[in-house]
Image 1 (tube, rainbow, N blue to C red):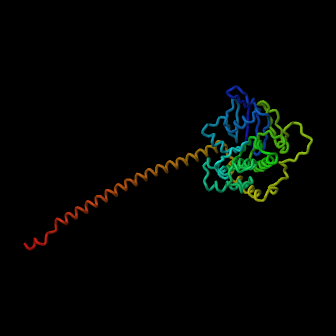
Image 2: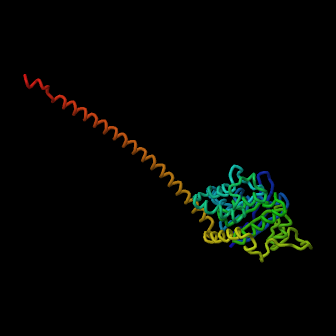
Image 3: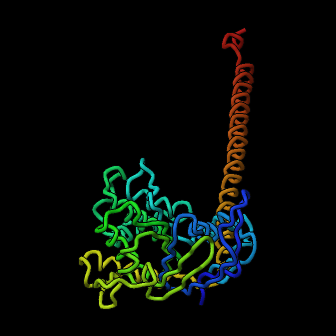
Length: 341
């Protein structure tokens, strides 16, 4: 099944710039694809079309079997929650801890506190930051900051992850570690699209390469290098198939296995629009329930006020009755001297 499909897509911005020119390609579920090209080639436009930040001027864009180029605006936020985004500049909230940054991605989807408390530590273990949960972004290295970004993208169990220059601000060692982590996530069945200028990593990963030049696709090559002509130097493949979970630290491997099992049990393979409709209906019910709760509170408040008023009136009536009885009793009493008159 195709996770992504572009058909004869053109994108012309209001200023007249043609970002994409009649491009067509598809990406199957579970693929790892590098999108390469010089600045202005159209890489960012492809990402924006996938997240509905932009709409194509012509052609169709399909994600998970659903054409998103015509997706109603009210469903766009739900679509984006099903796509994990990894940015070059991390985009972490400085006032929140590592765990809180990751948890925020679940909070906006309406996840329960119980589910957040269960899943966040698990995902942090997967990316090797279990012991950094209470640390703030300013205290992290570049590699650690990007790992938090990956954890945030991964925590909602997305079917698709879009990585925009994920190693752009990292040194070569940290860059390779990040790509190795993405490779592990991809093996779990998540489709990954990575836009990059990192020639070394593309050559080492030997994944599918989609090359753009001035808005057109000039190369679509499986197990490809950054350039068409391979270098003579020996390549140490990051994505070597001989690598297994056992090659990683025991605690990370165990967390990754647990994460993989939970993912396989919860991954929804239904039509994307059906899924978005379910999310929308679920949120509507939550808001409806909240509104009913607020209405009920108002009703109970009014009932309490009426009860208090009735209690006050009853107490007042009892006091008046008691006084009347006392007055009546006092009137019926005779002075003892009267009997001797």
